[in-house]
Length: 355
Picture 1 (cartoon, rainbow, N blue to C red):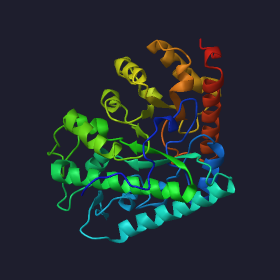
Picture 2 (cartoon, rainbow, N blue to C red; picture 1 turned 60 degrees about the horizontal axis):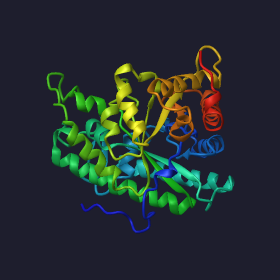
Picture 3 (cartoon, helix red, strand yellow; picture 1 turned 135 degrees about the horizontal axis):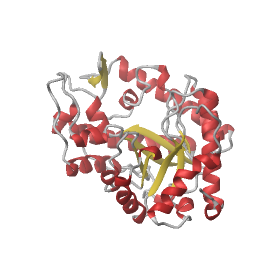
Picture 4 (cartoon, helix red, strand yellow; picture 1 turned 120 degrees about the vertical axis):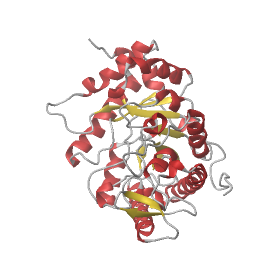
């Protein structure tokens, strides 16, 4: 498979499509109605709406199965443990493609209703990244794709080409500019070598960081759009993520420890954007204000020694994780709170006071 940028794509991937001082979502959303979800997201996220993922629809709609609709010359089948590569298209790949088309139809309709068609408004697309796919999806024989370097290469190249085609279709249908988010929740596990094989006695060896970077950049550099690399791991591999070709990184702010500060400082110094997961992904027991949500980001920027203006220029605001497990009411509230925080970062970062 030969990777190339599509002639129909933008000639470059302008990083300024990914800007600070705005809010966006992670991707997943509660419920099963793509039209209702698309209309809500487009209304609540004026600066960076996203294509909605509705995993409650089942097989082919979750983060991993959905990718079967994007891959070129590869497809998935389901097993009792999840997904595996299939020799030919089957019900899983057909269902994934059908669901993705429903989602694209829904966002196109909502985009037009909102008056955004052809305006160049920016939209974010999400896909599981190559390492998480290689860790989660099995070969036909039952071993994880990650155990076969040739299969990992084929998977990453297929994803790179398929994701670029997907972005082209969205540009064409919406008249939009595109940002891409790669979800890599398994990145830390892959680097640590803590993935189990087919039995509990079999552990898959750690993937060396240079190999991980090469695989990630195979996908990132094939896109004609800025890429945001997201992880919801409890121990995010920020140093590794910061060394990729991604224009920005995304993670749950609550996972940051003192050991991560040097890596974060380097990422800010590089000019990369940071999408901070600040707003709770599930409704808290007590009411919460946008100021309380903003405080960890303000403290982080102060602790790193950067000016408060960094909040406006390099920090995006998101929920801590996807919202598929939250109530619809809280999901809407979470996006509204995220937007309030982002507005404060953009308009008055110097005036934000923390105790």
